[in-house]
Image 1 (tube, rainbow, N blue to C red):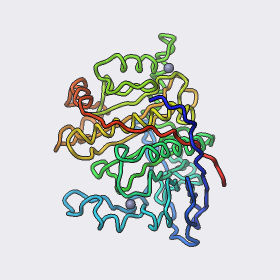
Image 2 (image 1 turned 90 degrees about the horizontal axis):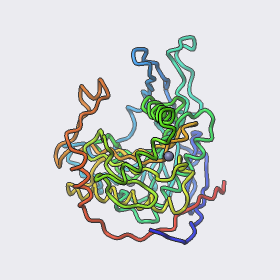
Image 3 (image 1 turned 90 degrees about the vertical axis):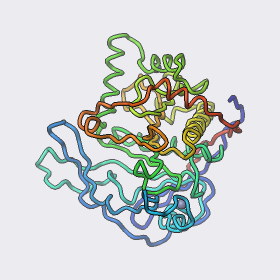
Image 4 (image 1 turned 180 degrees about the vertical axis):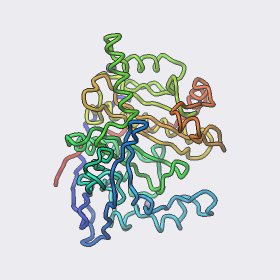
Length: 383
Ligand SMILES: [Zn+2]
Ligand SMILES: [Zn+2]
């Protein structure tokens, strides 16, 4: 895994679209955004406090009209088919990006959070809050098909560099309490477009489960005087639930997974808290880890396993947080998917129908093809 070649420069050029949204083009710029574009107003966006659970709910009515090109179950349309690609808004020349690109990021046309949110319905009612934040779409490649198992080493390295660049900028905004890069892969997860892409959300409030994670780290530090994440990484690497040896990352099924084939990729180095902290060798082995996890997933049942991929970066003051990428695939077998039903939805207590050690054994047994290592990229902001 060791590679001494220095990372390559990746130019970033930013444009403002006619409707005020920003687009960042990474690599060679092969066109210009159109001078006119359909404007979509973020209607009625706001947050509401659910007093019974003391948590915030984001109200985002415009999301119901966003485009779908993933083939819904039973529709007869084959995912990735020419008919689907024809109407893919993320392919070059589509309504989102008018030209060929290597990687790109644009502000979501259908956001849940925006930099300048509309006023709340009643400013005197403390149960309302503005939906301040950001929602960005990250285009992994211009190719309509692909995933971390089939993207080239250069494409994956580019995605990691783009994540580092965008999250660094979003965390620098003092109005953002949490920044989360993620990927919803597959129609079963509700991914409305199958073109390889992810998203980044910046939140004005710390989301409930993130608050809980921060508290767990603080409780452990107070009780033991040590880092909980370091202990979790050591346990994972020494366990039978480990999937692959990796100098910089603990890769495996966690001790208490919520999902049947859940896998975590967690930084070994204490102090690697955010994507922007990645050293070149750590970024290269993260690319290798992403490839390994998704290639195993695709080998598990003989089809591209749907999953949620979450990049967990440290909120402010969470010194014991280690950067992690967590995968939550919904399948518990070839045909059955886990549905968050009454118990899990009502109580947040998950019931896992699989034995984590057995899931790890099955995933670890899937052979991987050797893969070349790309030196990685460092974003060079041009404009
Ligand atoms: Zn496409
Ligand atoms: Zn640590």
